[in-house]
Image (cartoon, rainbow, N blue to C red; front, side):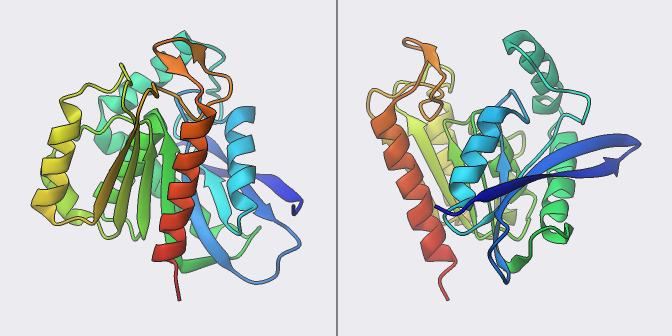
Length: 242
């Protein structure tokens, strides 16, 4: 496998510093498709970097979006919740931070990005982020949510979605309310979006996280995780064709 390089991308927004992380194959010449990755509620972390590196090894430039700010690196669930909830409750602010990170993916000078081939993906809170970035009308060919919440404060925003949407959901996930699934389907159908929702039997929240170990609530599921990543890569192959 190629040696994947990880670099910091530091930028300013509204007087605050942000430090996103860029994963790419430094030996590759020429532009590659660019993916904005929204991490789980722990934000920029070693675990998020490992995921980004494994995806970048498939031939992508991956930027892990820092939506909390350079000085905010949660160390536990309480700190993560305190960082996440203000953004969950202020989607306009969340979307602004995502859009700026998305611009950084395209404009950073470390790795050339093929700007006609862009997508976003995310995990848990990051899954919500990926869908919300798509709802802004960002030019993404695909938005992929792994065990993320599906609600939208304004379902009509789905009319802005330009690419395909893939939701990878644990069928036994207790943290994503059941009523969000039919509401999401109605939202996507009303906007004429090309969407898929795959439910993995027996999987709960955080099923792609090897460190998740709260039985019945947040638990790693190797089989579901492998299937979910395969589904994402199949979709990316499809939308980036040509």
